[in-house]
Length: 225
Image (cartoon, rainbow, N blue to C red; front, side, top):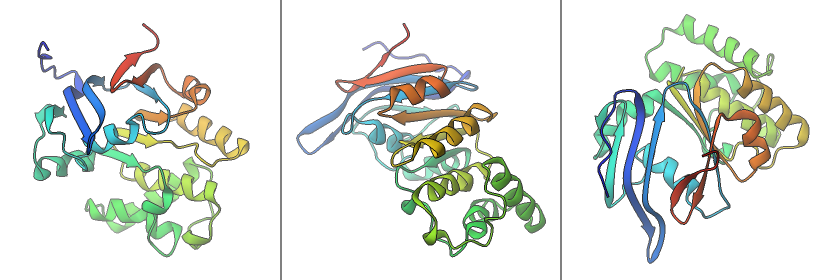
């Protein structure tokens, strides 16, 4: 396969990525370029490799073959991904994997505090982020007692509070009722952040994404070309 030329215009470049679970290949020579400002939707059924692809971008899985270039640097080993995780906000498919603090405010504050943000600024960020997603007044709510939809919105808030350069969301509408899905659509449509969203719901992606790809037979296919 011809090598992709590294281009500083791209925040993420994946070239010829292969990944298997045991004897089952999931990604088969996948290549992908992502530029700042893009809003990308990634559609595919369960098991097609959407979550695997995101875990590779975040350095949570290491492909045996292929090249990963993120924010202009080739990423190979665990230390290479420390910067990636500070600049790319990843919202997990299951919010219970993301939320672990006693209250909503503590969960949303955790990331900014870890980034060294001053405490006063953190409090302001928590307030502004909860306002952005329509959860003002939730600061002292007990996280594990929230509804599934509320947890999903709070997990999004924990990532937005870190002001990521890119936002990655894995199946954000899973388990949501129609009202909360509509709320999420409005939040995403009004965000200034670049993002990549994986979902099995093509209709949802068509409302929030400018580019649409399908994971098919281990590779990305542009659905709008």
